[in-house]
Length: 473
Image (tube, rainbow, N blue to C red):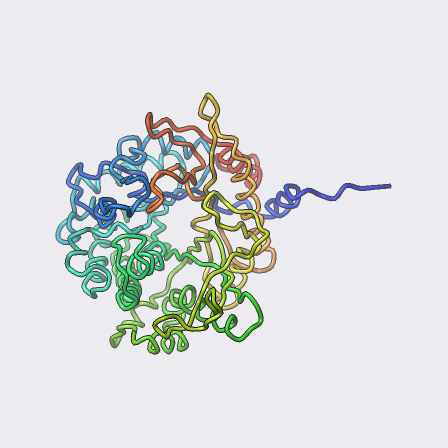
């Protein structure tokens, strides 16, 4: 008797079906990427409004001025989310919409929008998962120093309290920051995100003040809470493997892990910065501006850790000529492709196995904190048919492989409680503008028509199957 080996899809389904019925299925967005209406109802400019006007900063000169027009189409989008059977919606609040200029009283019209959004979600049985900061710092705060300035952390805590005063009676799940790495490093060191800086010292100061703002906001939220809150922070994380067994490559992987992983988790979950990172920075003349009491504030307990995962790194300690130091005498840390792997439309290698390993590492090294995969998804070159439907088999396979990777991590002991796809809608993808599409739902930007893709229907059916026929949706 002969048997046929199970297909990859069958293996994925078998793992996914081991998820518990109360596992969260959601989708994520951010305010600047979907809302539009950037100059309406009292909203002032953010650093991304400014950055979009810098020649060459964003592909095709795209801006967030209209985006997906979610500000005017919100009820339609919530209805779509509910129709897809997703039980949780992770969205962000626009700081310059709620507190124009980043100081002073709240803007009632701005808060009214999020008030309506929360009510709309709850009326349709969808849990709001609110993120306070997804990169849209008010431009006036940037002009006053931005995240490299300590005062911005205190302004963030004030803003968090304003949002909680209006929404805290109905919103249980609060995420302080989304991906401090991107805000600090892409925005202040590499210059490819707003505000476009290129200073390692500024980036390190920004990381610390983002952490401080997180801790201060956690304290404000807890002290003002009128109901139990679930407070989280969401980090962009991956693995860093040496390209070879050479000492230079192993050391480069250690540096990458210190700067891209432990720099973010250690202060929040262990109350300290990694000693090797401090030494690495000191060798480059940079220090973390820690004051007495800062780390105690930063380490205020969180209830959930958000993990955003897209890809991992293979790290080399030599440049193209084999040198181990660069022109400034700094050690080389260079990312390389693994090779031989499928890639997304952005050329990012598809590595679901590393998501399993990442989640297991968190469970091992930072035990006791439940995890939600708060972002995971892929851009591909979508080709709509005459009705606007996209048969995105590659994205569907990507989601299936990564959800199975989450399920495998759970089987092996990681406390992972949910998975939020990035993104609900095609949207403004930061420096890529509108050229890259990550959405479960296609957006025709000319007409703003929304059309669920095959991946959306797959996620709907998968969530329904996991929950059982009597579940939500």
